[in-house]
Image (tube, rainbow, N blue to C red; front, top):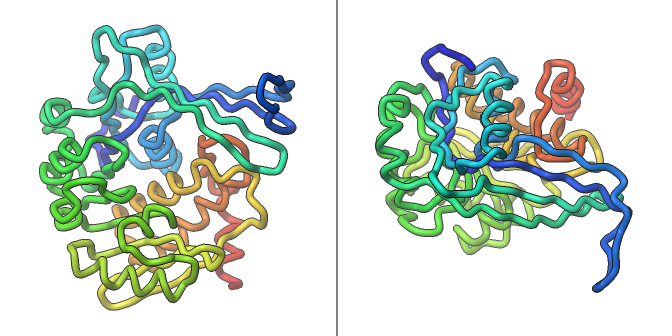
Length: 305
């Protein structure tokens, strides 16, 4: 566990991921042989924290687990990854979250999620000293909006929202410095069909008026659009056909936040974010591997584009 003051705090999901590799999904009342099984630390918040630690950031995680044996394993894995888990709440009588991914050979996935516990405003308040000390705070918006808003408002540093707010939308956007949404989330948030760079850039410029100073939107096959007050860039996807898109967005948020926290401008931060996403979707499961050697070919590909 990293004892440095946190550069980045991540508030979000934490649990266990179970990835089952199957040739194809069975029909009703049928069965399928599992070719490979992976068990790992998971949840979007934990994935982002792992990626930040791999990039050398001092990172703290705020989330909720149960008081079961699974929580022991999950927290031990997070600590081994270099994540400060002192703000992870162990909820008495609760079960630790579980995400089961069924991954077929064609790269398609289905999730089965059991995430019974989420962050509360009291959990956020208990983590106040850590939140206020961080240079950047990532708020993962699959948590209740009142807890997410409390974390965003408590932060003294940069606030990065991951996902589209379901409630408290205006207040959350007003509290954000950075907003990142995938295509589905962006379409729900803006009402636009975000299937092209042109549409994503238009939506991004409108979202800038609601609070964030940097907006990132998935733009279909055109890649990802990054929009800020005096500039914009659209960067293509890297690495060819993905093996598993799980975790690509988490790695993108982590690398973007890391680069901005270390002083990079939007264009350089965008390139690192896209490279991190490309490296992550080239392997099965949501757990990132952002070693320099994994990122280098994706950064080189972007430089040639």
